[in-house]
Structures are given as C-alpha cells and as structure tokens.
Length: 250
Length: 281
Image (cartoon, each protein chain N blue to C red):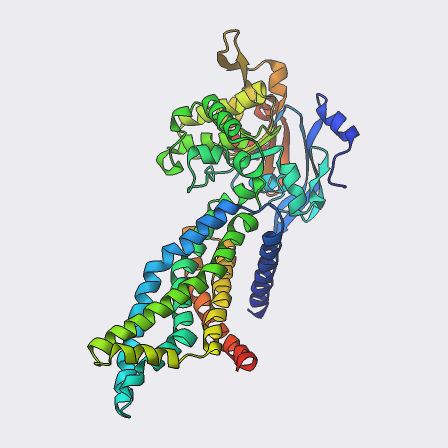
C-alpha cells in the first residue's frame, strides 16, 4: 500500500518534471494551448459565476443575521468581501473546477489511454506530455486565477443584492464596507492561491488520466479518483499555502 | 550519437535483402508472467513477417517493443540500423519517423476528422506546407478508397473504414516499415479482404516492409499468397502470388512467449506439430 502510494507520488513528480521541460523546450503546441485556455477558461465561466453569486448571497444572509445580534448589519459587506476574496472565492472556484475540469481531463486522457490513442500519438512521433499535459497545465495555471477573480466579484455582487433587498442595507454603505474590509495582503492571498490550485487540479487529473487501465470501468474510476484526489489536494494545499502566506505577508 | 545510423549502415539498409528489423534474444516478463522468452527473428526489407498466435501469446507486445512503446527486459532490438532498446523516448521519435503502426481497433483520434487523423503527423510534426499536406492526405485516402469520407469524424465510419483510415494515417508520412496489430480482427470477411488488399498494395507497390500480427489465419494466408501489380492503364490488380513472392512472406507462430514455428506458408501448412495443426484446423 505504502509502496504503491510512493510509486504514485514518484510518477506524479516525473510527469510534472516532464511537463515543465515541455514548457521551455520545443515543440510547443500553441493551438492546443489556445484551445485549452478557451475550454478551461471560457468553458467554466457559467459554473463559476453561479457558484460565486450564490456563495456571496448566502454569506450575506448568514452574516447579516449574526451581525444583527450586535447591531452591526451595515458592515455585512466587510465580511462578505473578506471571506470571498481570501478564502471562499479561491477554494470554491477550485473545487468547482476540480469537478468540471479535473473530471473532464481524467476522462478524456483515460479514454485515450484505454483506446490506444496515447500509444498512437507516441507512435506518430508526438510526446503526449507536450501535446496533452503542457497545454492543460498552463491553461489551468493561468485561468484559475482569472476565474477566481470573476467569482470574487460576482460573490460580492451577490452579497450586495441580499444586503440591499433582504437586509435593507444602503448600497453606498455596503460598498464602502466592502472596501474597508479589504487589505492588500488579502488581495495577494486571494490571487496567489488560485495559481497553486489550478496547477494542482490539472496535474493530478492528467496524472490519473494517463495512468488509466481497465477499459471503460477504468475510465470511470480514474474520473472519480481525479475529482476526489483533486478536491482533497486543493483543501490541503489551501491550509499550507495560507500558512506560508500568513508568515510572508502579514 | 549511438542512435544515428552510420553511412555504412544506411548503405546496407538501402540494399535489397537488408534486415530492417532484428529481434535478438528478446525477453520480457510482467511480474511472474513471461510474455516473450528469448525471441529472435529478422524482417527483411520489402518482406512480410506474419506473427500468429493465440490471445496473450505476446504478439502485440513484440510490436510495442519495436516501436519503443514498451521496453524489453533483455535482448537487442534493431530497427533500420538503430539499436532501439537503448534509446530514450526522445531519441525514439527519430526511429518512429520511418515506422508506421496500425493499432487494434484503429486508435483514431476521435476528436479529429478523418483528414486531421490521416495528416496528423504531417500537420503537427513536420514543416510541410499545408497545401502539400492536404494533397498528400487526399492522395492517401484515394489510395485506400475513402476519399469521400475526408471530412467525417471517426465515429461516423464503420469498423472497416476506421481500420483503413488507420492504415492511411500510418502510411501518410511514407514510412518504409508498417506494423499491423490485429488489423482485421472483428471485421466481416469482405471488409477484412479490403484491408488485406491495402496491406498487399502497400507491400508490393510502395515497397513497404511489414509485420502483421493476427490470429485470423484466413487473412494471414491471403496476404502471404497474394500480390499486387499495376497494369499499364494504372489499374491495380490483386492476384495469386508467384512462388518467389510467397516465400517473401514468413510466418512465426508464438506460443506462451516462445517461437513454435518459423517458415513460409507452405511449411506452415505441412507442419505436423499438434498445436499448429489444432490452430490451423
């Protein structure tokens, strides 16, 4: 069991190393990178917008009730922005992306493995890591922060709708509270985390996909493993990255 | 530099009768299961080697070792004058430039059209101008009689058409060696004959050396005993092979990772080995 786990980690590290080498040496498959930027970025927009909106709205509702006990309802924006930007935006966006992108990548690469398409690529002189992993890794790394920023904004916007309609907080008061609750360190934290999460989600999914065996059943299993391992890794990474950033930024 | 064939080797390889693939005492085992046990054989330029055997006898594994998709535990493998068992994945890319492989079930890229599949290597891995690639793709698809399907997706093709597109993809970049992994398995006899005809045409008209892995005896004997010729008006005709031509197709029978038989079609038919008799019956 421990040996198998160590082997998995070793193979994962090898894959990441090869992907990094593929980033800086030729050939680079540019059109695949553009395709993946679109698939991962634009393709995930709807799910990220909906998640962000309802998270911000629910957060405003919950914190509004709590703040009422202290007569501090007008500062609801401060709680929404701080929570969304530092923690909920990055983590929830990453978890949604794990479900959407992680499962998709594992299923796609897994299907290619069990139908010999990966071997066909190699036989045709293409390195599957350069062709399949590098574009996805780069796109996940770049698009996750972009999607997180969008999720943050839409979350704060969702909070504003609830604050205005349900909590009867004036718009001006809400927005000034949003800004007051934010410090530069929070923004850095909210921006740095998604780079790490995007990298983790995609590389785990690629690793799992490329090690798929056992036909269609294997593809299903790989998809589940990619989502579960990706989600756990995101939450664990959140803890460690937060610790590191706390010691560096605050 | 060891990966590069010397000028002498190139000279030898360009001659008739040159060995283009050589398996020398190759051994491979997965855990306790021995897949190939001390296997040796040679493929001569322009000839056909037909590897027969039951499922799991190590036939496909041998092809994967030749293309570098798998590494043998021991033994030496030469492909086109290069010792491939010592090459890295990057170095193997050079060897694969002259090596085409047709996978079981075709292994077409299902997100690409027939045109993109067939021209994949030329579009992605060469600097050939797009117009030239398109022309080559149309030429190859015309050769295998699938020109009208050029813009279809693989999912829109029948099983036989997919195998033929796989052959077109493997031959598009004009490799001198083609490896067929169960190219006719699961096809009806008529479609299988169409695929067999493509193999014969490539061997006899394009001078492609080939290794055919199959357990379909009918197809194996068909390829071994037929030849293709182009008439003066350009029509391609497939008919019975001459005795000399028949001898250029050599059979290997694998059983439990060992070579049970090696010889031409006639010798295989005359074999008295009980396992071979059972296999042939």
